[in-house]
Length: 142
Image (tube, rainbow, N blue to C red; front, top):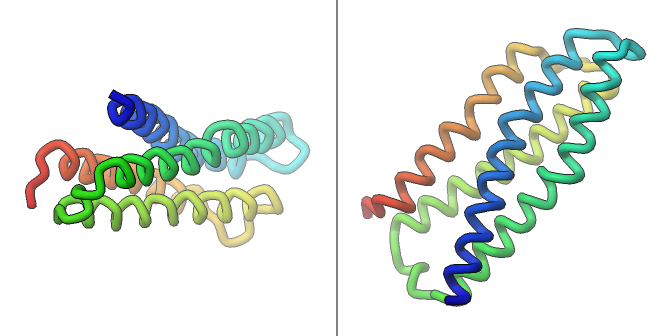
């Protein structure tokens, strides 16, 4: 029964993480469309910082905590190939989290080297990774 609670919490924070990874680049796109000091720029800067501190970072940490707890509770999962693939994709997703934050800080300091087009393209990657991860977890193809 405890395992199911841990699994439920893992899923809840995965949803929060994916949602934040989809919204954060959009905030930065809006921020890039204005200039420092303008109301939109400042609102998006503040909103993205709050999103990062209140949802993105805690969700990433809790996804890992509950995911690793499930592995500790059920170490037999480590022998399954689908889990290895899932973990590799989760590492990539975690790296994207860090990359998004780094890009966001560049936007906050003037946006040099960051384009709205780049952010729009990157914005799709977490969704695509989530699709593959869900298929791996549900269908367990190997």
